[in-house]
Length: 287
Ligand SMILES: C[S@@+](CC[C@H](N)C(=O)[O-])C[C@H]1O[C@@H](n2cnc3c(N)ncnc32)[C@H](O)[C@@H]1O
Image (tube, rainbow, N blue to C red; front, side, top):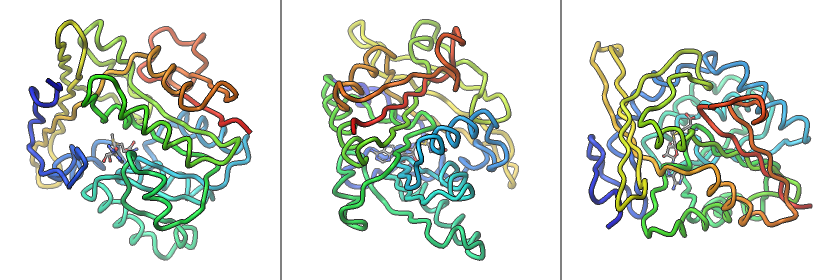
């Protein structure tokens, strides 16, 4: 039995057809901006890492495939990249669309494209509004990919999605994909509180569901105090606990042996960090 049949999100959303949208009830979407803070709270390390590598490789056209409320996309639009932002959750996209409207007087935002798309059908979804367009870079950041649970127990959906990401890239294009350090979370039952994306520490309650000796799901309970209506917000998100080794090999399979694959821990070379909170994979599609 798949883990998500046993362990349910605390806030029961009504999923949109065909997509397991954990944000569908709007609870996480409503407080996400509060959770991630505004653009200025993105750490300098993160900006320097992402923008530095994109510029170093001459990337111009970037597809943000887990744009959520648009925080990463806006950082890239501000830096002059041509950005196409997609997400499966209309509840999250609502905030990105609102942000674009609020920036409508800034000419940099005139060409920011925001559309709904699902990783499982990504090339077709993107092709429906931008036929034949391939990207210099695809980004899937903020621990997003782990939202895809392992429905069939053999990670076939994850493999299919990784291959879809590769198909959206030009030859030589880059994929940035990250995940929390689930090896550490499974071993300790806790989530490192250091935050590498935001300028403040975040505390979660971590639960690891082990089925027949195999870690099948990690849930994080987020508790955010006092929003503008002084109401406490609690929501739970579920993740597939990727081991570094397994996800590395699935990425290598999707990109083929002529591609290049670099792995960073908290934006530094792996040799410089002993227990990173996040791993960031950067793949370069073969030319
Ligand atoms: C943790 S949020 C991250 C958003 C943003 N990158 C950030 O750092 O704030 C993960 C996003 O992945 C999206 N997502 C999850 N599964 C998806 C799928 N199958 N296709 C497209 N987007 C998906 C969710 O809707 C959500 O907005």
